Length: 149
Image 1 (cartoon, helix red, strand yellow):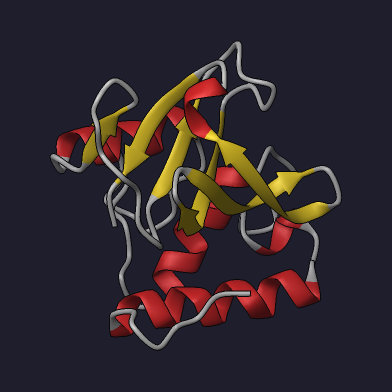
Image 2 (cartoon, rainbow, N blue to C red; image 1 turned 120 degrees about the horizontal axis):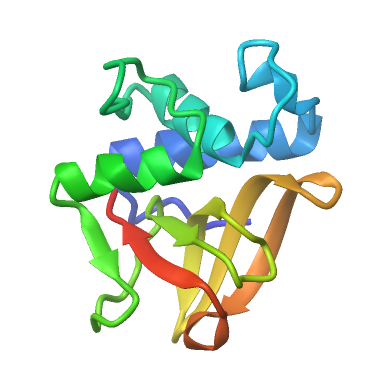
């Protein structure tokens, strides 16, 4: 999946957790505290919490961020949002954020590879549960930007 030799310890933890969860592919309620809801943001915040690099919900202070808009607010308030209009090149552990009219709707997933502008992500609440997808980002309608790891 990903060569972790040159990654930081935090990036390595994130990748190991993602590998495990991808193999298990449990129901989304695992990440949403048992709540039946769209769980892509739950998945992202759960992974980072398990990797001991928790996010902080700007509304509650909790590590769990159940909504894509709130996840975007977190990255904006932390000064860690790189908009799609920037020339930022994503790295492993960054979070891709989308809004309508993206084919994903409001959605988030985690970058696991950047191969000369072809970005590979893993995300929850995608067709099939947890899924790996390759993107050519500038061509993705509704792409907002990256939450920087």
